[in-house]
Length: 103
Image (cartoon, one colour):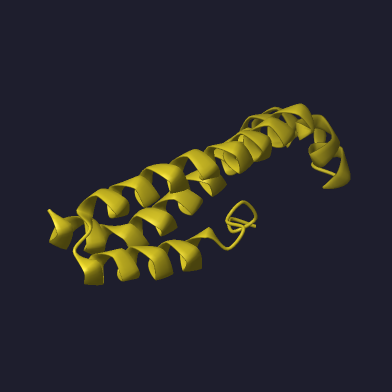
């Protein structure tokens, strides 16, 4: 679930930053990094938005007992935010090597 918003961006980032790193083009690497974060912003907003808007439906679908409903309603958007964090963490992990060595 955490890779829902990835859309293959990790592999593309590795490919393009590796090519630019081999050329020594630091500016292009930072442009790819910036573009990746902007591109990830769109699915991130969608994921969190869907989780917030549909949290009541998700809790009903999962048949959470009434005494845990309040906690579940709080946790569903938190899971969306955690998924977004994992997406960004994966992309940063791919870029970290190039950004450290490029500077």
